[in-house]
Image (cartoon, rainbow, N blue to C red):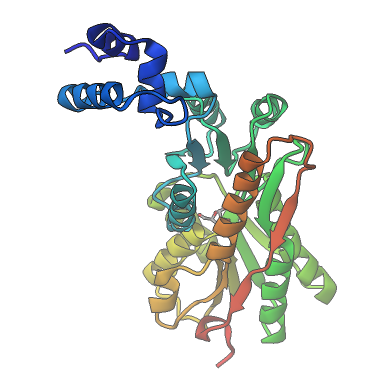
Length: 338
Ligand code: RIB
């Protein structure tokens, strides 16, 4: 059955489209429309099960009350936990979320941005991949509220929320040095984004201060565990002289523990371990793994608060803001000298 429009309803009931629109948008009293007409319209609309077309409404009002939320991988527990908190806050403020994965792929992200533009989302929350600067800049220039998080785009002036990545890895590496470890490797994804470069810098800075050699293994970004675990195992087999290893993200860390278990390496006696991101598997591992915990609630709260402020403030002259949040180093037995 063809979807009924406001025009169809008006024609069927011999009233004007404007009258029907005012009634359906709850403005009958304000526009002094008689009770008999209001009841006739509402009765008919209930009978036929009319649903306003959200796209038509957004074209008319310029608002869709939806927010586009794009992260690397919607199933990744780090992003999923943040997304859930954002969704709750957005819903309480009258916004629904469209949530999707970029896979850190520029072309796919470009495709998703155009989907969001077609759906007239009112604002964007993005953990951007590399190479998407121009697309984000054009959204910002078009007056769209865009909040980046987890990493930012140095050449794009828009709001972003990030953690203090450099200090986090500097502090964790200092902890390993203070425990007496000297041959400390850093294993991470090959990535030139702000957060991953900052983490690598923190590791190098801590080692540099102590005059220790760095051992870095960069793995091509992918989401297939085997393609992460295998190169880590090969690296650990080749570098038996290491006494500690630092994994740059939760996913690398989880695969790193698989490699360590497969190789029969004892933690921390053969090899001390630290990982970025505190992840359930790190707490359950034997021994429990020292991890850098990101402030999930604070990240989500900052992201949605900044975006709602933009959405509720018509003036676009608020200068872009950046919020840098602190992490916690949860020290456990995997990094302590026996
Ligand atoms: O998989 C989640 C990890 O990658 C976290 O470290 C987060 O910062 C993201 O960049």
